[in-house]
Length: 426
Image (cartoon, rainbow, N blue to C red; front, side, top):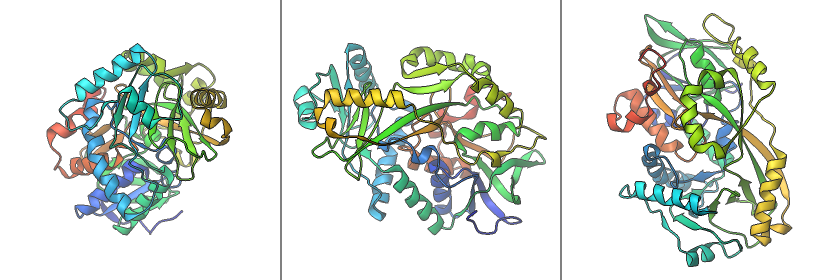
């Protein structure tokens, strides 16, 4: 455990979860003069915040999130002036393999018009200039020159240091077991080492947020999706631009290799929550089922046994789950790498240097919850970023801080309210 002594102390805000959202929220709260403590059951940013692809992107963002993506750009640039964490303003090139994908990209670009976006249609000559190593013909392309690549693990180490330097108390290896309620409002957190009082509490615990909400009887329709990633050995003369397609996605790394993944290979298992929230998820799944694989198996019974351990009056053994470290889907990763080598022969000399997987917290509409909880004044949620959280993390943390202090505009906060799901008597 690495922390100052917190038991028995009083803070303005206590945050459960030291990922990018929890730490960014804490940092912006400190800038407003509030005292903040952040707890994590494991190491800071060990889970999805440091396992993502390392993109700061605007292309294909939901319209409700696009402002957060655009507002995060100058924040990432500002932070990159303070430390080297592999920030590369290399742009993102999104490629369509067929007419259907191209229609979808153009439709998104039309909807995003007038929002201050720099994304544009890339003609074949520009695609050839940006990707001279590739020989595959594409049905169309959109390029956003202001998008960037970032080394997630290095960026998270920087953000942790920055938050500590600003005066945020960060307590790792110490799980928040439940939120304490007194007089109908949230008044503090019970951790493994004792009670910590706070005026306001934020649940920003990624995939664990659902179960922490369950300790209060709050229904959060959040599911888990697993995504696998590989990194290659260095590739001399490879593309500088980030590339997105349904065959592969890639980002040049600081070590000269590439982070490679596939956007249509995420995996989810049928669980009790899958059935419980089927009505909420079905419309979005039917629209995007080509992006997700669903599997039946023993995970249903594993999740059923686990969820029976969490809730009001239960032990809530978050300390039993220090890390979420899923097994990567090696077959899909090899297939993805084969597609890349087929389309860009320059990668044929490269080798897979490592693989990993992360578990993503998703919500039915693929938008996060950044919201107060009407049932319990003083309680807030910041979760469900559906694989978009890293790139939009800085602006999301600032918006969450403003929601907590009551300075956020109603327009900015409205798309992310918890009550949009109408599951908690609201």
